[in-house]
Length: 140
Image 1: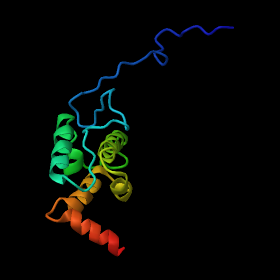
Image 2 (image 1 turned 90 degrees about the horizontal axis):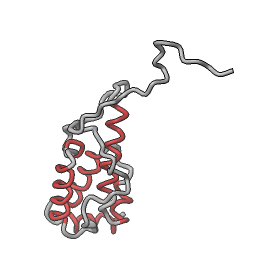
Image 3 (image 1 turned 60 degrees about the vertical axis):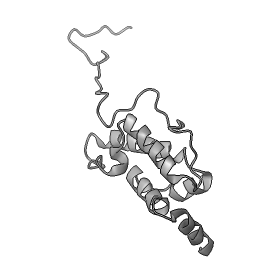
Image 4 (image 1 turned 120 degrees about the horizontal axis):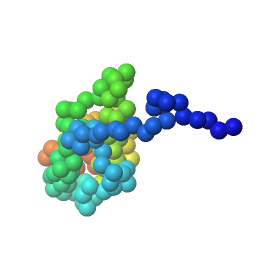
């Protein structure tokens, strides 16, 4: 016995969904966790150049707000939270993919992209940051 559609029933009809490509929580089809934004691997040398490359790449993708705090996590009950979390994780992946393994291992458990970025800035973004990082590692 086959079921006949009920007139006026739209439950099985595909609904068009529109996405705002300018929305900060938008991801393109080409975005993936394995994607490398810049061809520079940060290994404690050349932090200013690496930093500038990341900032330019995230700016081009309209994702700078995830590392500068402009796009903070919505409330857990917000309908936007899941999408924010997805994009935040993607930004974390972009950054991790440009770090040497030993640096990535240190920051991989950051709660969000801003925390990860701030940790890198604190460790390497000040004069002698890399030397201080080495000294701290040797002491611990």
